[in-house]
Length: 553
Image 1 (cartoon, rainbow, N blue to C red):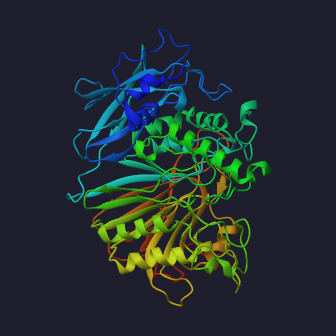
Image 2 (cartoon, rainbow, N blue to C red):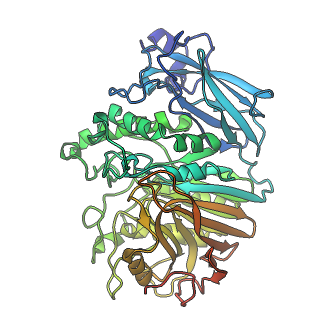
């Protein structure tokens, strides 16, 4: 059964929403768990996220049968009280807070308790209990107080994890890193299996069709979260998450459907599909109540400060954008529409919010969590230009506004971290690519996929063409993995961590290259290759023949 009207009225309108979403505190005896579970209800693991100086949001979802075809996870119809505790030690001898939240059928029996009253800039451990069942232990970390002296921040960012494409081996290695935080930049799930590249794997019937409803999306999150490496990475660190397109539909844009099933290109059906996808995302991620969807709307752009060292601004480049220019986002040779002043990838309100934040932030390093490539990406190594329009290349006015404002409003170091491409890039960002010798004002690091695209390769012909056509691109690689960032007051050091294969398990990890940006100097300063000494990157925007970027051969 669901919560009764009388029970909901006790909490008021806002409290009812929090109760249903598993974010409200309740008595541990109010909604008792079953005496005996059919199986472990914590099959999808635990997670934490959105760290503040005084707390974090915790997450779990009760799902003793996570692959049940109805998407309900094999849980009872009735609400269930889920208790949690947070401690200073892994053995829970020094518990600092306890509480309980209610897991309801309406939100897939997920809970999102927001824990406050913690000390800043320190590690904590947490766990859940539902009746007699005890969850795995998770570890989380609070942020430093905004403005407080902060010497160092270590984080990794990842994206694009198609279950069907391969094994999540990269997360085995990410979970063992020495980090404060993980940032996920989107394509956490894929709405359908694009290819089956996992050796020895089969797709069960409930995963063969494209997801278009809540049950379908729930199953895809369950499929990914059933992977032990991903669960371990979530349990090891707090995460910041956003979405790109595949959490809903390939290349969707604002109110416009993407390239999926034809019937769901009808606007009303697409809005219903989007609402289902957003709810499933909320149910499966460590998101605060402020991110609770309202139908087909969900606020995902938000900011996090880490002392006086860094500010991470998570962007949403899907929900408010105009449709792609000149087609479906594919590369085009001539597209005047992409220069239109009224075309936006952020939407006016999000863009102004972002630009106002530039002026207000004292952080030394301003980091944008971004979904699609911001740097100009020319796919034609000849005299012409061939540009895709799903990325910021299709929304030139917004790119110029953001990069220009960062320069004009005194942003000391603007760093853009990006997913989507299934490739590793390090690139200088110019204020206006249409102006010859336009200054470099920022640096972009694009991270490869966890699995999408198969095993990949170090430097395929496609990469050589990109390097030849884009002198601002200082490094390229197309293997799978993630990016590890070590940030201090003098420099940004990003290691491109790669695995040689993902279509079978057991791959080792290696650093393909380390890329350095110096404080106060926009653009790549050096590319460090493990096989040799540090190589200077040359003047920003100029390919000078050094090892700053592999050149075509």
